[in-house]
Image 1 (cartoon, rainbow, N blue to C red):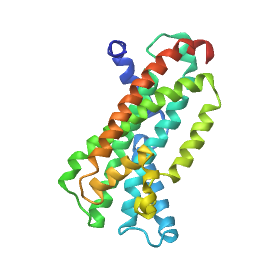
Image 2: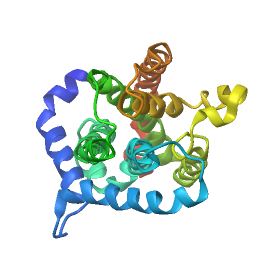
Image 3: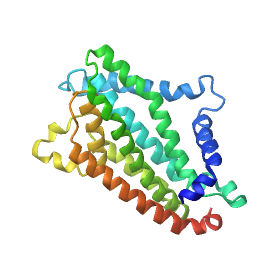
Length: 254
């Protein structure tokens, strides 16, 4: 697979650029929407939820921002990645290329958009007075872990969606429900001894790691983060196997 990707590296690069630019094609701001869109969404949550959760953490708006942007990265990649094979049915029927280029392009373009939106978090950290610590050097580890997790997921979901067309809707529903089981608008401390249930969700560890580094200025739970990273790598390997097994029938099924 790596050999194929290397041979088609120019196609991979151009497809990633297409995914990044195509999302906002024809708009005045273009790629800048990758910054503006999450900022506007964050402002909505920041205005509404402080009234609902009056006992929220200090600097609650910044707290929300640090949770919302990684979650937006997660949901965007899952939604677009699951549909990517069916969405490119025309080219799949006509031209041969390594099919895994499609989910990899979606995950990578989502990563680029997330990195473009990261300055929003830094702006809130600066103006809230929270500031920064040297633990920010661990941020790439968390970002890479989330990227690998997402790539493993969409390799599986994009392949399954070709054969089971309802999979896309079921997965989107599941992700919507997962939002409430992820500590984005609240802290895991609210659940006390039952917080372990939330930790079964890998995004709980990832979101908490972002917050530990940026909001609490503490070292994250590296043991849990490494467990999620190893699990994500295993999921990626499973995803590759599943994708390669199912891609043989893509041209006939799409």
